[in-house]
Length: 135
Image (tube, rainbow, N blue to C red; front, side, top):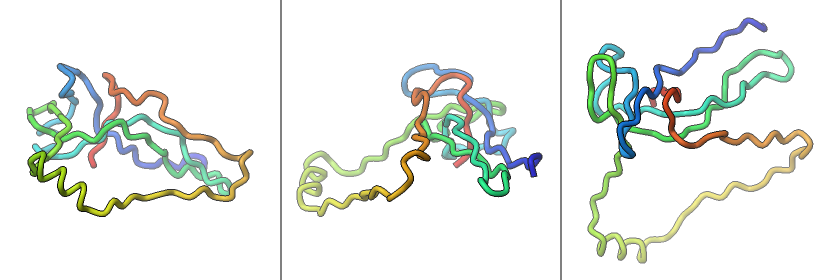
């Protein structure tokens, strides 16, 4: 079981950062990428191994950002973070006041605290050579 290979989700990586609103990645039309595709820029996290079988199950990756392909070329793409807004400020303010606020809260579990590993992203900033995968 030690030679088990799980599929690497990486399809490419960040190759340029032309400005603070876009990045260039080394995948494009030749890689079946389309305008509007969502790409995840991530940091590889720890490998997950079954404690009983020692089988490698995959990795827990940390998402840096989710971006959309906005310009497409044969061998590269330009990606940006798109935020869609449809309400004007007054409508949005009124809706926020009138709507019920709902949120998710995660409750603490009764776990053995000596076994907690505290997984954290090492670098949340998007950088050249960061891996990307398709969402």
